[in-house]
Image (cartoon, rainbow, N blue to C red):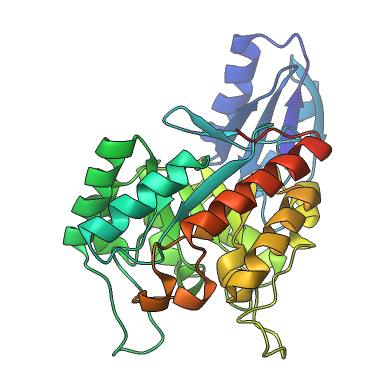
Length: 338
């Protein structure tokens, strides 16, 4: 449930409610909007049955949350969350682009990619140092060496870094180099990993699972939020269906659905969502039109010789053309880009 405080509620009144919850072994989550404070209650709400919280000073009303994802729901926080990543806001009026190669292959490849994506408007450099691959014989990434290359590209260009965390043991080392920790589709329901990242307070990019429902996806976000980390960004990257022409089926309807059900920002990955470079541009523009807060796009200086996902990667020239189109779509729907 959520406890909605009156607009003029004092800090003492808010503290009194929080202290009552703590005394009952319930977990309060305070969300401060522009007009009022909302206190989310996590735990067995039966403990509040005889406490008449509605009558406490400063309380306006108590609303039960029927969704299983309490903290991720818009009922808990009606104001859309903006995640600040070291000065770059995700979830506001501005469209944010994360771009770069699927995998870090070499210093030259990464720096060339970084310079290009920054030139054309990206705020984040994406690149995998640890790569979860379907086949054990595929390129698995450069690991720590790849992280060091990403950090060097960050120092050279000023771009923020988003890269994937594979397991609990790699959180600490990846956090030293990255600005955003990415949880890939295969790990969306790795609950131990979600909990640990929830304790890290690092910004998190949570990709939708390969065949996950929206409810399952939001419950995965709930694991992170319930550990105290409010910096969660959702990423629609396509789901597995019977269609075989595209790599996945990019579910753009998920964008307005998430906006209705949750306060969390959402970006779209048209590269993994389609698996074909010629589809990236139209799907990226459609994602912005649907209300996405940003995009994550694979860009490689030489896609034909990429060690991973070359077929879905844009060249720098193609990325430049896309950003010009994105700017037009963003303006048309009341958003800003560049």
